[in-house]
Length: 458
Image 1 (cartoon, rainbow, N blue to C red):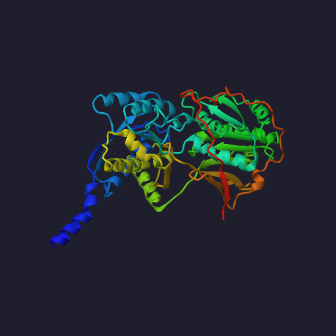
Image 2 (cartoon, rainbow, N blue to C red):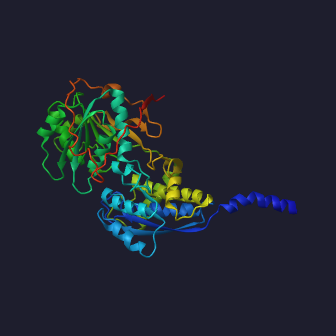
Image 3 (tube, rainbow, N blue to C red):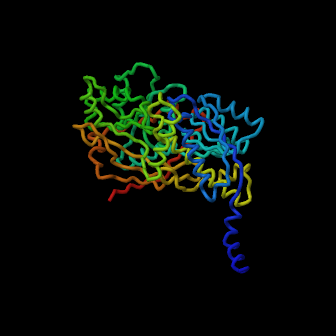
């Protein structure tokens, strides 16, 4: 019997040794305004869901997460809240902010204070520079540069040489500016021009079409109504017959990013449907596993119970909801590893390093974080496959982890072949035209990430 007891103790010893008990102070920055897809109403239930999951995990249940929600206004609220709270006690982990300018200030200070930050935002190219001021930032959602890899792969495969980046600039949060900035940074070897117009400004479609004439591919980021206006104007000029490639970037499936919808119930619907047959959409790849269905139902229930009836879509799961849920899991895994190696929760550098260059199972599937602390992205390419009905389907997927394109059965190479070839213009694109320099740091963060392979789907 004593021998058996010793044997059992030996079996239990590793479990006992690494089952840590620790209080973790988490500071979360989310806006109250539900016009944001990452508002408190939408995201908070996902963070609390992850907290409950971790409490039920045998290995990680010793971590008690004390979650403190603070307002974010996409300007200065988060920074002021971080400073005020830190006079008393600094947090162990910061989740958010999402908006670029607000995140920049918070991440700089947190990195200086050795506090890990995980955000489902801060997607701009400048945040790729983790050498100094953004050293403690882990991006749990694919950045705009990761999205741009999809375009690099397509340009190489189809031998396209030139593009016009056409975007709406609100001069405040500048989401479309940062979205297309990612493409600009990733494609220095191509002839890239930019065309910006202000939010609320009348669209000069004649001038836009004049600029399109000089290029092969048009990549757009703007509101859905503006996308329709441009496509209708191009259709009237017979520019949607395959002589030009049109794309819109719709990462978050929100109308502010141009949702590819042609239907308005007006006299232009039929023309718009014809025009949109030439419009391709790049969006996030949706993967669904059984646990995700449970999570999705739980988010809807939480929103309903909380009585947020004025926000119809607040129970919907988007990239931000998924991301902040997975952020909690990633931090817990990294903290456990760091503590196993003898480090404390206050060693933000060590914990951050354990979050980078790893793959783990998130709520919607595998999450792969690269060596630079940025999530690898998987994206889908959608086109209109039934012009009569005006319906879209996914024709290809791009997998960022290994840089491969998967061509699905609905893919038509003819659709992506330019009907006419243009004489390439010799002039070098103006490097100061708006997207060459990051508005955050004034540093160009570039470099093409190697040659991309394309593989057919079997």
